[in-house]
Image (cartoon, rainbow, N blue to C red):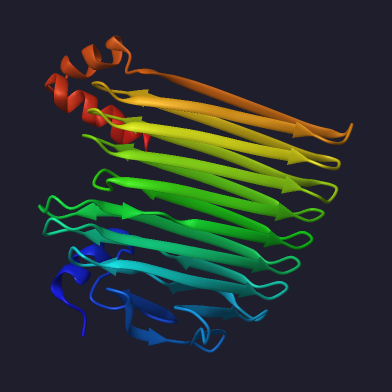
Amino acid sequence: MMNEITEKLLTEISDYKGEFKGAYNIREDSGCVARQSSKHIKITAKKDKPGIEIHISCKEEQETVYIPACITHSGISDTVYNDFIVEDGADVIIVAGCGVHSDGKEEARHNGIHRFIIGKGAKVLYKEKHIGTGSGTGERNIDPVTEVEMAEDSYLEMDTMQISGVSHSHRITKANLAAGAKLIIRERLLTDHEEKVSSDFDVSMNGDDSAVDLVSRSVAKGNSYQEYHSVIRGNCRCSGHSECDGILSGNGVVNAAPELHAGNIDASLIHEAAIGKIAGEQIIKLCTLGLTEEEAEQKIIEGFLK
């Protein structure tokens, strides 16, 4: 049985409403508290290390599989290795996410290492949300690693979010794309107080007509610090786009460093970066509608991270 903190975290990271339907695996404090496979999605425990293997059949069409992980108190350091094997032609939605709750002085940590093997023509929508909660003074840390291998004409869309409450996070994403593969990444980050987060992306396009579109939006409030580093490698006829948009509030700091490496004359690569404070006229306009300055700023931030 899950504890109450896990259930609360699940509502935030996985839209939990009392139950999951279909295939799911719920991890709580370094152990599995619930697991279920479905007709076309099989979830099995790894034999050599903590984690699971998720096998998605070529017959799968738009089913959702849930794999959330929760840390519910201080003094726990959890590392899990999850492999997703997506057969040729499959179409699946994966909802991950991690919630870390600290109620004491010791650190609470979760490290999720996810590996995706995506078959030819397969389509994957991956959703991931990270949060930190609790009134303890111990740090709430999350360090996710995502490694992706995309076969010909496959498609992966990653929608990732980390909101205020995570003390420190180092987010690493690596991907290799074969011919015709398409990778879409949408990252949204919010830090506050003394929180720190760094995002590292490394995408290699190795097959003709592959493409990546990477957009990161972030808000740094309080005394928080953010780093963004993206590397897009065009090794063939391909297209790549990297964009980093940051908003500063208070003493927040954002350091953005996008890189492009063109190794082929037909590689078309673009990067953009924009960092600044909220425009004063936006605040004034919302204040004329009856909002306070603080409420106006919050509305703008919510819209920016939507």
